[in-house]
Image: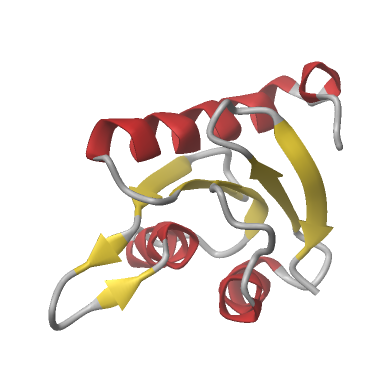
Length: 117
């Protein structure tokens, strides 16, 4: 477990934004990513008949669509015990293999950090 109070303010911000997206939209996951300029992109799970995306892949897609060239960090708020390989691959595609992915529970407490690698 990672001590959430020991996180840098910018990392606490993306965890808070991810948690808010999850709660506001009533979806299984909320995610936020921070690009190379410090801009943040926030998303929830997309579950349409014709389109299914995790919150993290949606946030990465929003960053790409907005012109982000790289990612500094990502956060996902979830009940799941893992971050899927597909989610980590999306972060890696834009941010590189060393991009940290903060994984928090619904209470916002960061449970662990993995790299996109």
